[in-house]
View: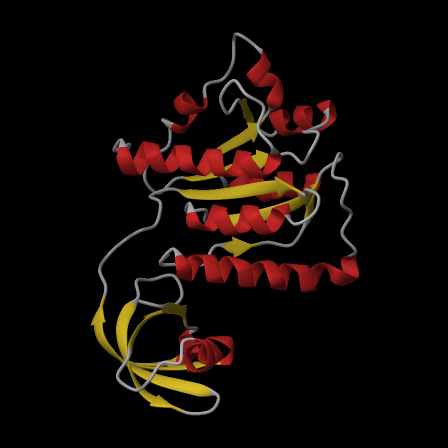
Length: 252
């Protein structure tokens, strides 16, 4: 069943009005009819099975049949701080990271980031990424849409990280040593409701200066297995491991 995230102002008790791109998708792409059922999600809560009651040129009305009581969100809040990579890798990271349960994304300008964002185009880029994240949330039947923050510089990221209970940096040098911080042992410290920020470098990784600053702000360097991962793989490894620990192994 198709899912749509609908803002609060479009809800009137058990009646929901769908407009914009979502209405276009229902009318023109899915070619739905009155009586068809969809899932509508208010922001940051469970969705409801709704029946379409009215279809106009630019909007759709539906009424709630049944509220869902199924929680599919990770029991911890995971923010991926991603050093800006080349090409369309951010599309992939945001899409798949959303599917794997990320709560938020922070793109940041790392020293070795080849890409330099033009401030004039940043808002347009963020809007496009927000659409990718919303669509991935609908596809994976999330209950909430992950937040995407503006591009930060390292010093701004360090300030942003102060509110997190656990801070991790994926550091490739840890994968090359016999004595290393185990990612499994670090995430086993997490408890339901905790927040964690995981910092991942761009192609080429972090500079030694960046690693030192992150350590000074209580980021723990860890390895993601003995192999060196691509930047677009690291975030998915981090999220999948947390999902497995909490949702399959029954972590606390």
